[in-house]
Image (cartoon, rainbow, N blue to C red):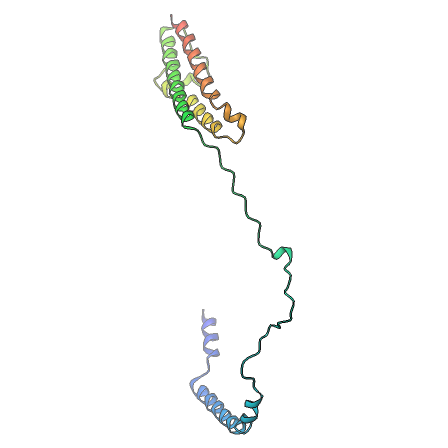
Length: 187
């Protein structure tokens, strides 16, 4: 910081030096004007009336290289296909059926366990089998199937778009079958 201050102060000419420099410049200008007053008439005759163009009219236009050409237009990014209103209604319907089937599976599992005839065979569901948390835990699978079905519905691949309903239908079917099995065990 100190060094920067010194550099700035040393670079600025002092006031008395500035007046001396200005006085000498003024004297040299006055001397030049007196000498050039006789040469002004000669110089005025040599000057053109208007400035000349720097571009020659007979010059050939410059051909641009290919690198200087404008860019090719950018292709628009491919848009994802959107779902049809009918597909959206079917998706919501399958989501309701899938979550209802998972709730039915959870209810029948609790019924079979409390009757003493059944046990939870799924190691991921076993910690929840003896509490009401099983109802929330069984909703994870249908939620994932809903997400997967929605992604498949708007997929880029046409054959995947045609099979968007399979994950939700399979999940609901498995839950209904498990619930039916649990009812048989509970009786």
